[in-house]
Image (cartoon, rainbow, N blue to C red):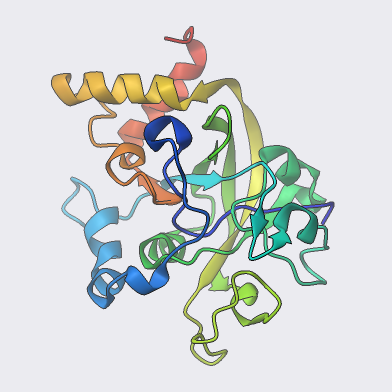
Length: 242
C-alpha cells in the first residue's frame, strides 16, 4: 500500500478543539467486561424497537505523523497492507485511502471494546463519514463504505507492531477490523466547530444532532450515526459554512 498510515486505535482521543489534548493510544485494560458484553446492544440500537443496528458510521483517523512507542508510525506504515506488516493506528488520511489499490484499505488498530463491537456490527455497503481527527482542522472530509465485514485484526499478533496484544490468541482473537473503500470527498469540508455549533443548538431545539456521539462520547473513534444525523450532515454540503 502506497505509504499508508492508517488510522486508529479504536478510541481516538478527543479532538484538540474540544479538549486541547488527545491521548495517543487506547487503554483497553480500563474497559470493563460489562461494557465489552453490552455496549454494542445498548449503543447501536435506535428508536425502531431496538431491532436494527446503525447503517451509518463516523470513523476517525489522524492524518498527521507522530511517534508511538518510539516509532514514527507514519513512516512505519510504508508497507503493502496485504503482504507485509503495518499498523496505521490513527495515522491515515482520506488522501491515503484514495491512493490505495482499488481505493480500499483495512481499518485496523482498534483497541477499545465498544469501538470493536461497532466494527463487528458493520454490514457490507454501510456508509461512513471519514473524519480527520487530532489535527489543526478536525472534521468530516469524505465518504466511504464497508466492503468487507469484520475479521481478525492481524496487528494484534505482530510483536513488532505498536498494537500488539499478547493477551489475544489466534484461536480466539480479541480485536477485529473491516475493509473500507473510498466513495467521494465531501462537497465541502465540514469542520468540528460547525458540527459543535449545531449540536449545541439542537440540544435546545431537539434537532438532529442533539445526541450525536461525536460530542457525547468524544474519545470513541468508531461511532454509529442515526439516519437523521447522517442525512443532516450530508445536507450541510449544500449550505454555506455557519
